[in-house]
Every structure is written in C-alpha cells, then in structure tokens.
Length: 235
DNA sequence: TGTAGTCAACAATGAGAAGT
DNA sequence: ACTTCTCATTGTTGACTACA
Image (cartoon, rainbow, N blue to C red; front, side):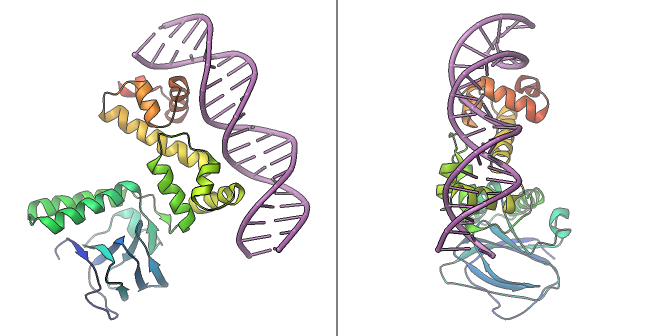
C-alpha cells in the first residue's frame, strides 16, 4: 500500500465499494454527496470525511467540485479513535489543502509528495475533531480567524452568522463546546504563542496582531492563560 | 421548537501609574 | 522595554420569559 495524495473532481467509482486502506475526502470547492456508515449527506469545504478501511461507501460530486483524496494505511490516533465520520477541519489544514492542490497540479516530485503526505498526517493528528458545525457558526469561525487582530464584538460575529446575539451565543456554545470569548481567547493565545516562538516582533506588536490594543491587557491575559508572562515564555 | 428580549452577575478591557 | 497593579467602564454570559 502506497500512501497517496490526489486531487479529484468526480468519483472514479460511482458505485458502492470499499478498499483495504483508509481514505479521507476533503472538499476544496463545491459539495460532495457521500454515503458511508450511518452517514448519508453532503460534505462541504472546511470539512473532512473519514472512510475507514474495508468500509463500504459511495460518493458523487458535481463536475465543478474539487476535493483532495488521501489514501492512508494508518490513521492518526485522534481520527482512528473518534466516532466522527465527518468533522470540521482547522484553518491550518485548510490552507495546507490549497498548497497541496497547487503543488499536485503543477509538479511531479515523489520526494516532495512524500513530505507533503507526512505534513498532512501531522496536521491531521492535531485536528481538534469538532463535529460538523452549523454553517452559520462555521461562517462566524472563519470570520474570527480572518479578523483575529480586530476588536471582535459578539454583535458583529452574530451578524456575520445571520443570527441574533442570543441565538448566536447559544448555538456557538452548543456547536463548539465553549463560549465565544473562550474560543476567541484560545485562538489569540495560540497565535501569540506562535509569534513569540517564531518571530522577533516586540510584545506590543504581538499584542496588536492578536487583538489587544493595550500591551498591559495582552500581558495580563497571556499570563493568566499560560501561567507565565510573554517575556518569560520567550526565554 | 426555534427565536428573541431582559437583566443581574461576572469578566474583560483600556488607561494610567509605579516598579523592575 | 516590559510587568503588575488599580479603577472605571464596557461587554458577555446564562437564566428566564415571551412569542410565533
């Protein structure tokens, strides 16, 4: 069995079938109709379908749809031990899929493709495995990820999801398991941690990049979240 | 059943001062 | 250059109720 990354625009086997390896299907554009296990429905970009080895499945897609198909002999533990057939993927993996598409459509390089597969596996292993989220909450999450440096207010996020503030807060908690603010803080702190580790930006700039106008507010939040100040973390 | 509004309690923030 | 603290202000949450 050879681990394989490929880009497809339609099902090569539009009949029920199975194979001895695991297969992941990740839409880039358009929607795929998939029937696997007890799941029978549509899968859109930002989501991933897991077809475990020897599991019967069937998928069809519109001609304009594009998706990454990954054949894997061994699934990372988070995926193999999960009950989810469809789950939401994070922004890092989404960005990486675009890279994969670009690379596979322009070059043939076996060594690079093996490295790409390995990076894909690592990104997959760190997916938080949130269930397939409501589209409106998915939209708001994308909005948060794209505007992490802005002063994000629930009112504005609720608008982006076409929900009232109250409904938005309820649905967000229900879908992600955490409040809007907790989710936002988690993203901000993870980004701050990455900027402190990988860049030489001064603290006020890092604070700004993760949405804190005041360095003091950033420093306080970072200390609360990680248990040590940004400066001590950097050392 | 899903959506929306109200409200009290609590948390987060900005500004500024002082200290390291 | 950065952290820590205080204080006033603003924002958010969650429980509850009402409505279609």
